Length: 226
Image 1: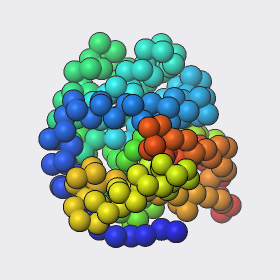
Image 2: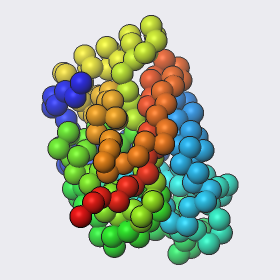
Image 3: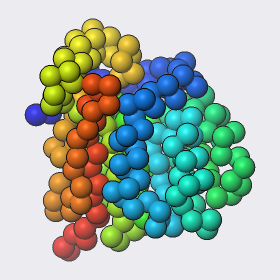
């Protein structure tokens, strides 16, 4: 069940992630199993154009461009943190005009043309947004995806093992006191936001790494009846 609660404002999120900088890559110990699932289940290797919300330090984008995307495929990543945009821009500079990184103001609206990407990816970002922002963001993802385009999202989810349930209880307790201490993140059930008729669910999976529970959802954009 969706619980609104207090979430970080766009400016608070900017401050948190400006401060974390390269330390953000330390979260790979639990993020990588889920992001690798995103790549596989979304068939990212066949993508011609990729949009990523929350590019962070650019580590995920670098992996896509190095090992998965075709040499002609392009990538655009956005982030609310100036520090992250700077780090990602430096990291991806060697890919030239194939890779662009842009700073956003946190609002879930992007200066890109409609139907201009065939993959919309986001890893561990929706779980720090407000419910209203999540819904608006998914509407924007629908807009920027081409017909039959694919949305792929990884996020912190509710515990489903003894260890992960204990960890999530601790995260929620800390979040209730000061959300910034857990990066603003709290568990979500992504299927409460991603559903028909706009989306056809292609994959929904949960996994744990070091007791951290993650959910990966991959969905295809469906054409709406006029």
